[in-house]
Length: 393
View 1 (spheres, helix red, strand yellow):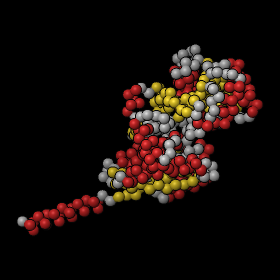
View 2 (cartoon, one colour):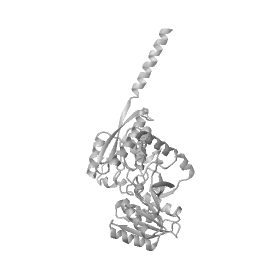
View 3 (cartoon, one colour):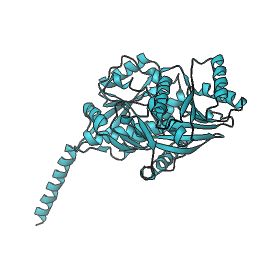
View 4 (cartoon, one colour):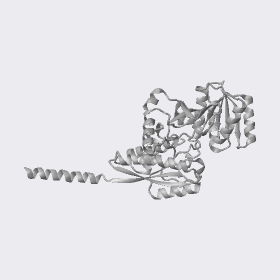
C-alpha cells in the first residue's frame, strides 16, 4: 500500500511537471517611441515611468495568461526619436526585433509621411482627422483626434456655457486647421439656428495678427471663443483680452500637461483633456495611489495615456495571443478595455480607440472637473456622459 501511494505521488508529480513545462513562458516585445531628450527630457522620463509601471505590474504578477493557454512575459524596447527619419529607423528596428506593437509617437510633427508599418502603432499625439490613419491599417489613435476635440468644444460651449455667438481662433497648421474645420461643421450641424460663428480668425503667429484678432473679438464680443493654438499664443491672446476687459468664456482645445502654466488673467478658461489626477473615479484614484507609491509624484495626463496604452495591449495579448496581425484585427474590430482614462473600444474610421473626453476649468493654477463626454467617432458626435457611465469607470 505504501509503495502504491509513493508511486501514485511520483506519477502525479511527473504529470504536473509535464503540464508546467508545456505552459512555458514566452517573452513578448513591445516597442515604445520616446521623445528625444534633446526635445523634451521631462516628457521622455514621464513616458518611461508610466510604461515601466505597467510592465512591472503584469510581470511581477506572473505575466499575461492568454485565453489560448499561453503565458507571456513582457519586454519593452525603448527607441528615442527626434525627427521623422529617426522614427522610420526606430520602427524598422522594432519590427526586425519582432515587436508585436509600438506605443507612441507623442508629436504630430515626428510622424513620417512615408510611414511603413507591419505591426500596430498606437499614436499618442492628438493626430489629424483621417490624414494619419490613411497611411496604414496598423496606425491607431490612442487619444481623441483634433477634429473630435473641435466637436467637443462646440458641445461644451453650447450645452454648458449657453453660448450663442462663438468665436474661433486657430494657428495656421495641420492640427489646428483640423480642429477649426470640425468646429465650423459642428456649428453648422446644430439644430439651434441662434448659434453662430461670429469670429473666425486664422493666423500665422505674429504680433500684428494677434492685435487684429483681439480687436475683432472685442468688437464682435462673442459669448465664448474656442482657441486651437499653441500654449504661448494662447497666453498672449488671454493677456490682450484681459487688458481690453473682454469678459467672455475661453475654451482651449489642447489641455496638455503644460496647462497649469497658463495664467487665465481673471477670464473663465476651460480646456479639453483626456484625463486629470483630480478625477475621483475608482480607476483614477487607484492609478494615482499606485503612481505616488512608486515614484513619490503625481501622475500627469501623459502618464495615464502611456499606462493605459500598455494595458490596452496587454488586454489584446490576453484575448488573441502574440500575433501582430491578430492584435491589429482585435484593435480594429473587437477591442474592449476600460482603463484609467476611460473606455477604449475597436477603432472608428479615424483610428480612434478612446471613447471618452474631459473638460476642466483652470482657476488660479488649479483644475476642476466640468464635464465628461463620450465620443462617437462613427457619427462625428460627442455627448455628455451620464451618471451610470461615470460610476463604472
